[in-house]
Length: 140
Image 1 (spheres, helix red, strand yellow):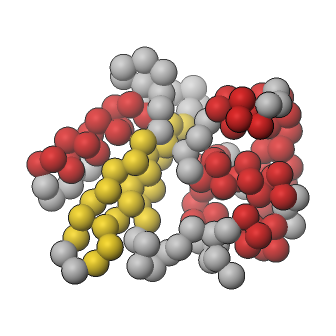
Image 2 (cartoon, one colour):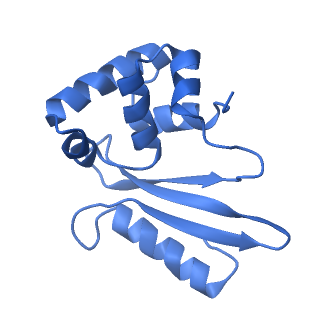
Image 3 (cartoon, helix red, strand yellow):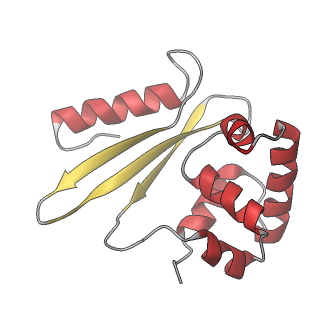
């Protein structure tokens, strides 16, 4: 994957490298990709390891076309509780389960339980599937 400008291309490569953990613990990152006359693309690079093999999910959002869904929209669309919707949004933002648990002052087991309920209610099985589904949700 390459961006059109050298600086953006380097930033994207660094974000993917960080997401797959080449420099230590995998971390999510953001890259803004400018485009003339329009708002820049927002690229979110999220670590995923469904099979135990380090991998990165690259999400490209066109803010002119696909605004991120609100917590309220996720509650209405999928029947999530407020907490489940907030956790789902944090996953969409690329936050790992550990940081979400720490921020909410709960155990990682509690967050995994929320994720299990989110998967059941959305008909998904993995975080990458959930992110793809949520990105299709609207803000209404």
